[in-house]
Length: 144
Length: 117
Image 1: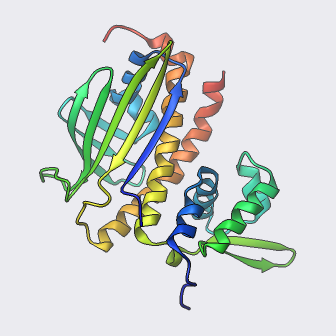
Image 2: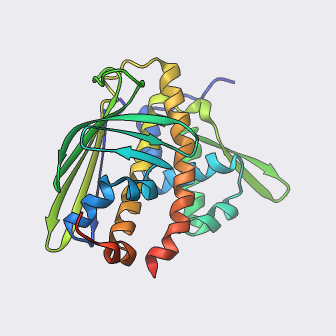
């Protein structure tokens, strides 16, 4: 059986407020997520290298501890469990470090056709490769 | 050609490992690539790459074709269940994104730009 959610976490050597900004400010989001980004406390829009644009409906915006949104629903539709995925970030301060956790869920509730799921996988496979390429470019700067 | 019978457990084990997803990602990006070329782009040894390829091969996710002295590997997408494939990619993307958030947060440039919002 396919798991219904993905959970990931990472410990970051930076104060929680800095991580919150990198996570939620478009200027930074453009460096780790999408080519173009618009986001406020209610909604957002991400455009990836592939040219694909996805819409976000923010479900929680509680600085600096919790940020959650639904995404991947069609433009102009209301986000529901049947047409979107839920992404939840939680941040926890730990002695000057920050533990960042992300859970993406809803794979078992969405009523997409196999065709849509396949498209989702394909779109993201491109984004994934591009992202790794970006990381490679970014790493030398970060190591300085 | 009908896909070999492979249990979902074997599939999930194959794609449930971050290193193997990196191997899969590079295979997807390159189309076809030798283990030596893969190792050059990854932080593991050629032997480790060969082990990962063997696991992926057993799960039916990759196939090797001998060309002269080299074996070139490619992904066999028909053997990847759509949902598992999507999950594996989504999971790998989050790994990469969290790493990027970490690097950006920890980099000096962000700290220097720090100012009241």
